[in-house]
Length: 137
Image 1 (cartoon, rainbow, N blue to C red):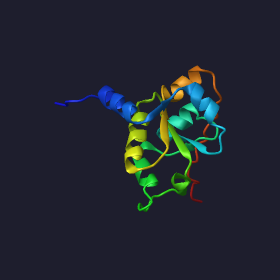
Image 2 (cartoon, helix red, strand yellow):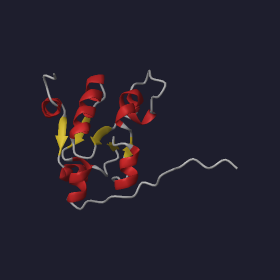
Image 3 (cartoon, rainbow, N blue to C red):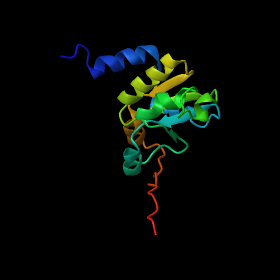
Image 4 (cartoon, rainbow, N blue to C red):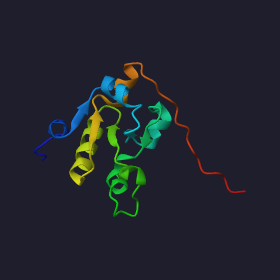
């Protein structure tokens, strides 16, 4: 039996990291020193779209992409920018931001309410085209 549920884990994460509203993220997203990071599964992006200018780092690979010692490291995470993570509803991104914060990535934040709150507010979105492998001839 578990002793702590996801709501408690997310509440603890939000005590440790910066939580931004969709309005704050909208105001910050054009800052060249800020990078929005969509951590949803690629199928969610294909189905629902994404925030223009956001990079994609699937939750399952995030720590590997952040760690400069990992063979999967992505240079964008060594840029010194502020990273604002978001998911569909704001729970995965709270845990993701806490995890990379504990790794030493800074500054980081997450967007309360996630992409769902962004869409509900009527803020800009864009389609994410599926890149399927080319068939062999």
